[in-house]
Length: 244
Image 1 (cartoon, rainbow, N blue to C red):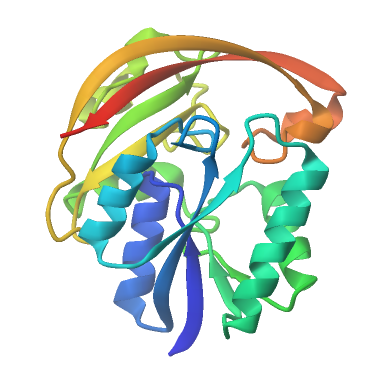
Image 2 (spheres, rainbow, N blue to C red):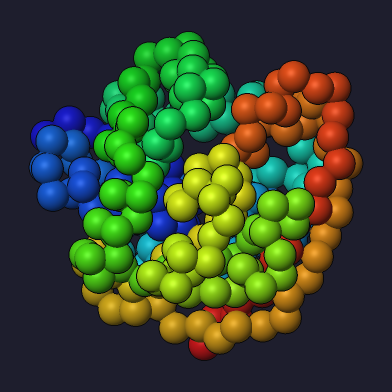
């Protein structure tokens, strides 16, 4: 099998993509890589505390490595640290990097261009699949996931801290992608066929946070529209999950 590492976000798309790669047995996945906000000890964008990330990796049975960034990371620093890490991974014999992206062309182009600089190829098991079909497949396989972050301009407080099920899908506004591929929401996957046992947690408080981001500091978000503006204001609802 080909040696590959997996870019693990802690959410549902990563979980389904990892499941598919493991089933197909073309790639040997022996490392999960996750970006962490070191100032808050949380998964970048998702806001998930790293204790739950670590519990995920332990249940999956694949070693986890974190790339730590400060809360005020710039695009230059992000690119520098990512190149250092991917160069290190290349030196360890990794020639493929797996992602859970589905249809954002500009994000894939960005990833592939940066990987090409160090001689690594991107792999996208979910690429161009219908998102509604993917979500129903995810649920039918027995995966369980909860929303931990929503874009407050698109989804209200009632959508964060919710288990994704048939009712959640029905309640989503028509303009929202059911997989949140445009950054509408992010999730934490806590059970399913890739886990030896469910990750135990309890739901904490919901918090709304607002940010003003410069274009050059928005590299790790999902919206392609950011590239068309110099800066933008946005708000997010977060649901704090606590490891049991």
